[in-house]
Image (cartoon, rainbow, N blue to C red; front, side, top):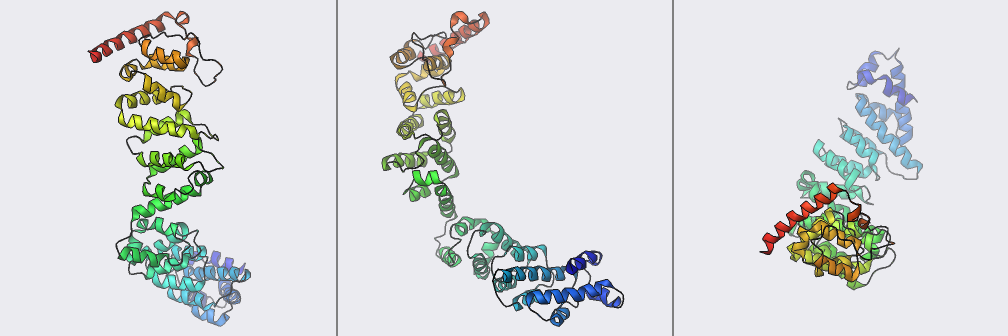
Length: 422
């Protein structure tokens, strides 16, 4: 209404005192009337005499008046919801902040606490870097806290103030984790002063707490929070999430023995084996299924490829070429019964055998038929939709060039293997 008109009509005088313009035009300017009405309106909103506001805003520019209006609107809304407090805090803030910045406006708008707290914050945050710190705390770090202003005031009042303002990222996880503890900063100060604070530990604790809030992970790994925190890395967190979602029950906690196997796989995952382990899970993932039986077999598989270079190479090829096989247990059996050095050279032949046969015929073929690029099982697998039907490409149905290419590839592989065997 009139306040908005004041704001709109004075944009061309932005940054200049309103009083100097208004007094020159006191007898014929609508702006003068709006200013008087605005002071009357704001005074009514915050319970202050119009004369007091007129006196305080006598030399105000548009920025200052807008800042006062922002605070008055917020105060009025708080009163509407039954939050009562002394409006003198608003006038104290107005007098303290002689050059309002966008940060001042944002901090007032986002605050969920009293103007008494805001007065204390603005008395401690007197430069742009401090104001930016307060904005960041309000908007991100402490946005879900029940005590945001108290914690911000505690940090700005702390002997570690400079550390908090200059490197807030070092304390983000700790503050998010303890955002509802009114003594969080006091405890943080003590940890820092005694040399017991660890950013790495806090990051791990916060990351694992977020993981455990996911219902599936919280159920599957109940009671194992401390184990997960001790070994946490971002890669391990991603691995755990994928493993739980694709292999563990959704509504019941598995046996502790199964949990321990998961913790061990989680703890031994590193940058070198992470990609291959993720690839293995992709091969066998079954959303919404309880496949805890596969978890024990998966650990056996991971232990093998971590210690056996030939098994690792075979599995890398299996993942890259999308080997189709029914279960982790079957894959473990293949790795145990197949001459892996030879299978790595004749991998396409091995893949054909694995995908088109099973049981004893597969075991025998993976030894006796590895050099046969045209292996066709006597009893092909049927009724399994996810198995590739390589047996449909039988030699007699292949074209000349396709057969020739396989023969040439096989001859080259035979030569390569003869060199190794020798």
